[in-house]
Amino acid sequence: MIAASVSDFRELARRRLPHFLFEYIDGGSYAEVTLRRNVADLEAIALRQRVLRDMSSLDLTTNLFGQKLAMPVALAPIGLAGMNARRGECQAVRAADKAGIPFTLSTVSACALSEVAAAASQPFWFQLYMIRDRAFMRDLMAQAVEAKCSALVFTVDMPVPGSRYRDYHSGLAGAAGFKGALRRTIQSAMKPGWAWDVGVRGRPHALGNVAPVLKGKTGIEDFFAWMRDNFDNSINWRDLDFIRSEWKGPLIIKGLLDPEDAKEAAAIGADGIIVSNHGGRQLDGVLSTARALPPIADAVGDRLTVLADGGVRSGLDVVRMLALGAKGVLLGRAWAFALAAKGQVGIEQMLAMIEAEMRVAMTLTGMKSIDEINRLALAES
Ligand SMILES: Cc1cc2nc3c(=O)[nH]c(=O)nc-3n(C[C@H](O)[C@H](O)[C@H](O)COP(=O)(O)O)c2cc1C
Image (cartoon, rainbow, N blue to C red; front, side, top):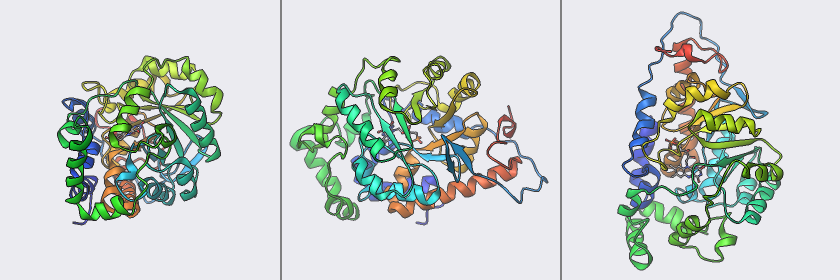
């Protein structure tokens, strides 16, 4: 199948990945209400068609946190992405560099910061969770400085992990020990392409940044147990002082859905925020990001850079998010699927597709540059 859309990449990923890995990426928390809302609310937003305005020259470039980007798009942090294709995060950073956009490395990636830094030709962003062990966090931030990361994305919507039913049904969660491992081995053996590329040639299968604190434990259950025990649910706004004291570069707070929280972020001097509900993987039932974004952009858009993610599956969706008030948009599952489907080339193709779709959307809404895109690009503004 030739992939003509993000949903085609999803289908290719479904065919290639072991069942438990596909479900891990595709799924959301609880009844997946928010996951569905993210996609449905965004695609329901009607663009305003304008014609005969000489759209022969478009400018998709933008500047985020002092970095010039080919388009206002970044790859969102995706935990365990390195299991989607061999040394997956290294392939992803190369694809992002080629496309002229930032890649965000998750705390819980397969490839360590240093490995990704060696693969990268441009600065990338590093995402950090609040971990109980502050010395560990300090060390990760020092590594991010060493790796010349150009922004720190601090994720705040995971003080506790939401439950994902699909992970229980697939054998990723719940079935601890031998039984769970057996189910995953059988599912992996049924996907020989993946088993050879990642299972055999993609070693080591450790979590690059977390491996030192896992002390030799490499099982998937060890990883989930570590997350349960070490994610800090005492996190509060004062902890941002700690982050600020260790990280002097641009600081982006990820996982805000409420204008009051966005104002707090502006007050503590964050450089940016990401309006996000973790792709519908945390508190199910919260607002879609498409609906949460406009009041947040109105409240703080003049004080910090507002980014958004959630449900973005096309270049048209990127333009919708920009029209709703975002200055940049992060792609989550879109790149995870493209990586699983075809590795680095898959992400390159997916990003070329997003760019081409943005050009169509900008041409037919009469928006010649990214700065011009605002609510006038929407039919019901
Ligand atoms: C499989 C998967 C793993 C994720 N891991 C992380 C992570 O490690 N850190 C983080 O801040 N967000 C993580 N997210 C959330 C994404 O960064 C992003 O907010 C979300 O995927 C956007 O929604 P979308 O997938 O609909 O584009 C993850 C999302 C998925 C689908």
